[in-house]
Picture 1 (tube, rainbow over the protein chains, first blue to last red):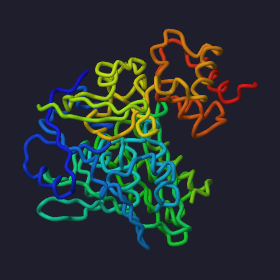
Picture 2: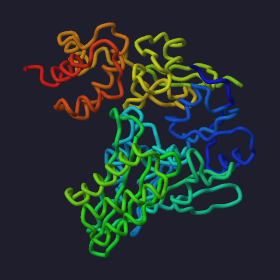
Picture 3: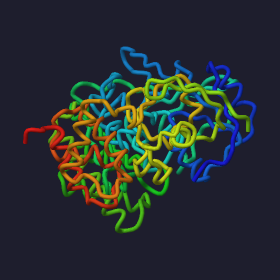
Picture 4: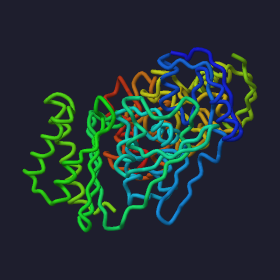
Length: 277
Length: 156
């Protein structure tokens, strides 16, 4: 289908974009357009006005700090895939970017656009909650920084106020001995995930973090499973803890929980076997 | 909903037009520029038939607003007619039965071109992964994979 008619404006500066957002109405910021444009084409997302962020080079900038990397919201998935931007997480950012949809989507789709849409099965959400990324939001009222886990409230629902723009994603550099694992269950290459898990594990300091996505709601931080992993639980004990936690957190019906359990255990196994970082 | 003047560089030619903001690139190419190699299947980014190059990188023409591409460079299959790699890929699709009805073929060719440019000698797994964003309802993909293998290694 074709989109319904809308007005279009392409601000030349961030300040101008924020002022336009503050005018209210049914306005939507356009980043890479790889989710918004299909929704416009299918007439699922009504918009009177599109605020095209494409000319805001400031949102494409990447700043490397000693302890963290700040990625502009318009950094494309393919930039991570190709290693054109630094990877703060020892390869996890690269693998996440490379695993999204298809190359022709990854060249245009952006990290910020993906987060701001908050599709529950989207790849960045799970990775960035696992990495405890800090999201930099701006509006004409000022700026604030929100942890990724607090940013997502539910499917397609975020902490963004109507006049706020997600401008950058800050990811702390991972320690060299820290390992990561990731598993994505999909029926066909490039599809949205049926289950998606990222595991961080640093045995040297007894740290683990397990995040599960592609659920009915926002991604889950599986704290008890992570604690068991950090404490060095064996396969059977870890599985028992994980499946009890999935039941308790209401991660779908029995079939879905089996799928999620398998996905998490594969992600955990990949951290043990692979020298990912 | 005011029409907007826009200038794109399409297949090495500067093209000026006035378009409605909702006009996606594929419609602009087909209807205003008469570049009909770019096909429209699903119009929501799934089928890959409309894949073209924007600034040298593959992109879905149905998911790019024409107005957003002001000053950018677009290359369609027509604009690759004399490209040596594309000539080789087309010949291989012909020889290895990489198409039947041909509707998906323009997108297949552009995606294959992009794959072989980034990865000159891909194995079958890499070919299938790279082509997973292009749907074909005729061939069952065997001929397409064979064609890309042949284009990569013409001697074998």
